[in-house]
Length: 105
Image (tube, rainbow, N blue to C red; front, side, top):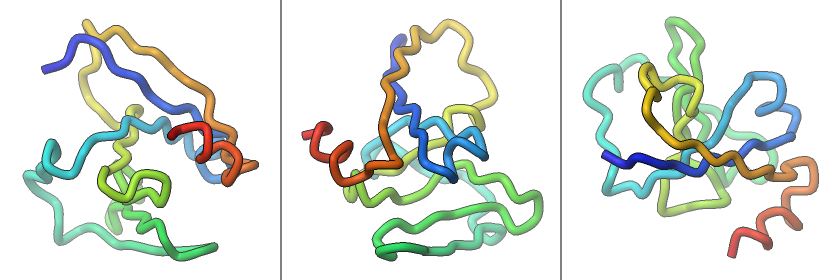
């Protein structure tokens, strides 16, 4: 279990309105233990990102971002216990996505 994490604070219209804070996790470091049957997905814009949300409660806890095709983006605000973590939040200018994505490399 890590003691420190870096999250991305995106200012795009979706993240800003829903409070989604991105914890980027490689696919092989994430296992969904339950609830797969309740997930619904949608795509918009380029269609590259697969946005997942719970069709029962509406929470968007994680999704497949186009910025990190080999990772999941976990909504840090949907994690139950973050006590003891040293958190660094980096701004991500999702309103200017192409330019902001280039800074991640």
